[in-house]
Amino acid sequence: MSGGPGPDGGPTRVALVGPAHPYKGGGARHTTELAHRLRALGHPTVIESWRAQYPSALYPGRQTITDPEGEPYPGTRRALAWYRPDGWWHTGRRLAGEADLVVLTLFSPVQIPAYLGVLAGVRSRRAGTRVVALCHNVLPHERGAVDVSLTRALLRRVDGVLTHAPDQALLAEGLRAQRGSRPVVAEMPPHLPETGGARPAVPGERRRLLFLGIVRPYKGVDVLLRALADGAPRDVALTVAGEFWGGPGELSELATELGIAHRVRFREGYVPAPDLPALFAAADAVVLPYRTATASQNVWLAHEHGVPVVATSAGTLADHVRDGVDGLLCAPGDPEDLARALKRFYAPGEPERLRAGVRPVDAEPYWTAYTGRLLEA
Image: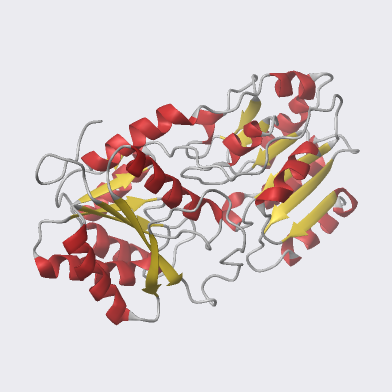
């Protein structure tokens, strides 16, 4: 594998700063899987995780789970807390003595004050340790007043930046203002929860669609409701399963206004991995009506369970859906185009034909490329 040897030309000692079990969701799974992959390649790796990552007022959903969604990483420490600034600096100083590369996994600007403290601790030792920001999102889809200034402060201080899409790299480059190396792009690799596998396929149509994931405005569930009212046959229903930031009230009112409340089921709350196969088995397709996106695991997760996907072309979604083969694509933020796609999906025989085209993703090539690009960053 290319890039990133330790100072003696040997393996790179890596510290990943980010969420791991008992934190839930794709971020924790990504950090954990990355640690496993790096260690398997011969790079000694630790995860520096959190005992308290966000104030509850800033993350209204459920933050932790009891049962892990994959194999936990044994070299995981949980010392960081958002309310202990002294611990940020001490953690960075300790990591500078242990690691050749410190990777700050950025999901939200809320993390950045702590990351700046970790970075200051690393720099205080002058040990030659390099620091890379691994940006799941360079900036949030829904931005607050200080998000740009916080992100700029971090990206201008680190040695390298890795993003998951070219447009995100351009955004990061602008914030860095040509300070240091150009951001590296690496496609997000699969890091799916262990669900026990797909249920045996049952012939025929379910007459039900599925939206899965955190429900926030940029995910476009309101667009999906409008398209369902205009595009899908009247006997087709929808399940919206996930955590609703702000509650399901507005979407429930919209469904009533559109006359489809009897066709929409809101399954509020985080969906644990063992519950996923039943949700997928009950759906003809997963619908991802995102207005904007960087990277999502939900296309691969649906395909892992044999289900086609109707998605917008936002972000990298279009890279994972073969239009007309294992799913359908439409324009983001456009209820009429999504309605057109739903009509096309429910043409006679089309659900079965698209289901037959679904294949699980091969994760290995993605991870080989990803770990190499990270060490180059």
